[in-house]
Structure formats: C-alpha cells, structure tokens
Length: 238
Image (tube, rainbow, N blue to C red):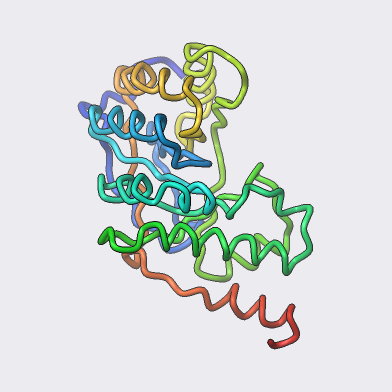
C-alpha cells in the first residue's frame, strides 16, 4: 500500500461504540491503538503525554495486579479520556488452566481494575484481551456470549522483542501498510515503546491514517452475569 494514500487531515478519527466483538469493523486507513500489561510508573505517563500531543485516544488493557499496584495511574489513564479494559490479573496463559481457574483469573482481573478506578468518576469498559492471545473455544465462546468484548490483534508490534525503537516502528508500519487498517498491539511497560511512539504517530499522520477511539455502546456499565453463572455451574452451584 503506498504511503500517504488516505489523505486525512487529522490523526484523530471517529469514535466507534461497540456492544460486541463483531461490531469492531474498521474502514481502510483506520487504526485502533491498544496497550497491554500496564499501568507502569515511568512508562504509562509518558505514553499518555504523547497520545495527548497527537490528540488521539487508545485502549489500555490493564493487568489487575498492575492496576492494584498503581491505582492513581490507572485512574489517570481513564480520566485523560482513554478506554480502560482488562487483561486478567496476573497475565497467566489461560489455555493452561482448567475452566474454573481461567474464569476466576479473568474475574479477578476485572475486579482489581474496577477497584483501582473506583472514585475516579470513570468506569472500566468491557474490553478484554487474552494474555499471549492464548484462548480456548470454551473461554472465547463464554466471553462472547456474555458481556465482554474480546479484542483481537491485527498488527502485533512485537515491542517486547529486544529491538530498537526505530525497528519496532518500522515493523509495525510495514505490517499496517500491508493490511491497510487494524488493531495494533503495543505494551505500555517498555521504554522502547515510549521512545518510538512519537515518531510512529507522526508517520501515521503523514501516511493518512486515522486513529479510532473504542468506546462501549452501553457507556461502560456491564454485568458479569455470564461469567458468574459459569463459575457457579463449575463450582456446583455454590
């Protein structure tokens, strides 16, 4: 795909309100920025500043353990207009757990992120990503039938590799250009991600992309009816 194809005048694009994973349909040239595994002191604030400078919003899939350790930072992410979802409590590979343990890990992560946001005036959104993108058919079906919106990944920046910031940016842009749009995965826990983000966003703008803001269609208020029911069933009704 040639550079500067789309011709947008602003990097900030539309807000996409979704009620289910199936609602996430992007147009050519649209990008969703996501950051996993935070929040982390010394990294997340710098990423927030860069996003503010370019006038775009991202979705942060927080670990419950990280949000619990940094509640003020978790609240800052939400209060600065970004979408906050969950990413389990401890980043365990859910595919290695039995059904009850996997659902409890998901629920524990949600509870910790929600508790970290308490008092901020902002609610956690029902967006969730599987750690390592590892899932089972049972878990995905359970979540999709419930109230969670599972976020998949179209472009993996692989910013967890020990590469330079420039290498991360170039790899991500190359994969994005080849696809034309998509959900991009970053992690707000790496210095290389902090370092590459300004140039990456500048190049997105130069190439005519727009950054879509994800938002829950129901305003962020969601029930845990399906997961609760599944846990009760697995526990024998207790």
